Amino acid sequence: MKNIILILFFSLLSFSAYAVNDFKCTVKDAVNLENNGTLNHKSDLVSGYLGKEFVVNRRTGVITGAGISNVMSGKMPTVYDYLPNENGYKVVTLYTPNNTIDYLQINQYSNGKEKPFFFKGTFGEMLSGTCVVF
Image 1 (cartoon, one colour):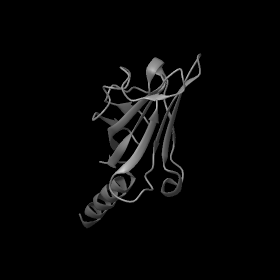
Image 2 (tube, rainbow, N blue to C red):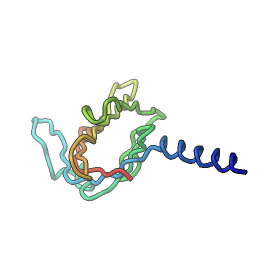
Image 3 (tube, rainbow, N blue to C red):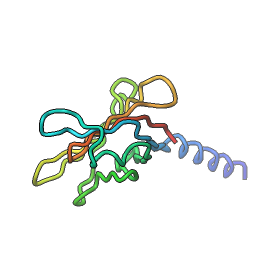
Image 4 (cartoon, helix red, strand yellow):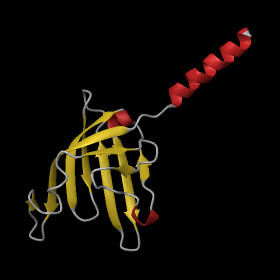
């Protein structure tokens, strides 16, 4: 009986050590790149993003919420999470055949609970704000 309890304890301990927490992000600024090279805060494309929240699955990089989808056309994002305390967390989604890209960067190396993020969407929208691990 004692061995069973020890096995169960270590199994639970090892499972929790490998659990990956996702990011919950809040959009604090949104702009759109205009044809004249300026950034527009008031375009119809970005006006609805302010204050919205989305979740990033840390393992897969899939974004859900705030009207953002980085799995259009069935494409799955690629996660770059190497040396997160130095490089941050990055997700790139490449859509073919037009070769458009979504890019998300979360500076998880920043001090404090809230980590700044930057998102560049396929249609020229650029969002920034903060994320927390949850």
